Picture: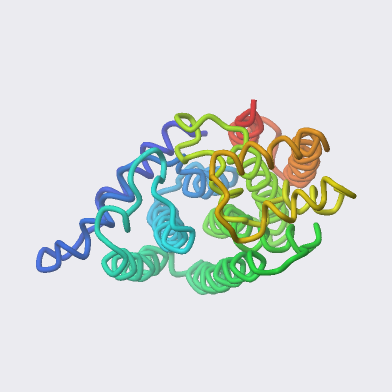
Length: 324
């Protein structure tokens, strides 16, 4: 069995080895940049760990795993443009360095590089891995559209919010695990259980990201805290606060969410105070833990012995501690 640290190094080597065209260096410079500024490599490592549950030989999963990470970073480039974000992983975003036009074009080419990597899956697994990747890519785009739509919508329910983050974030983590399981020749039942493990893990992961955006440390989080509040993004915290607030608190919250000349720092502090009064952070963290528990329940049902699951379970456990 391989460790997650080793698989992270293996993923990095595969990503670094990706060929780019010398005649279009301007196109690929932002690609190299976004892939070099860090990241947890959660998705490729999960893909390789899932494959390793069923096989000791994981070579055939390395390039598809790298392709999933390339696709993930492509979505980040475009998300940062949409969100008007200046920082990603503590570094300037691609559009901040190269401008919007170059960021869009370089992001576009990453989608095709990702497909090229996925296409290196073994012949027996290729139809299923490619179909899963394409379906997931469409779902991620739908999730991003919902995110945009919800910024303009006055009230978003918790159910709508969970569905949005399921599509925008969770399905790619789920697909990473299922891809590894397919290449590892797992049974369809085990493939589906690992997909569910990843789906619940991804939902918990995004809820934690919402908490970190409001309460995290900028140096550790890699992005300026409070950016979601400033942008009026419908995070779990805001959705829940709008549901629970009443009377004067609800009026204050609605006023703060209205377009206007609010000082950004004052707005963040005022909204955070309302969250604190309503104990929104605690509720968000409890919901995240609930989804983590669901993910472990699915993993426990996968028909390999507990010893082989230790590394993948430990990686999930490490994610739980990100808020602390």
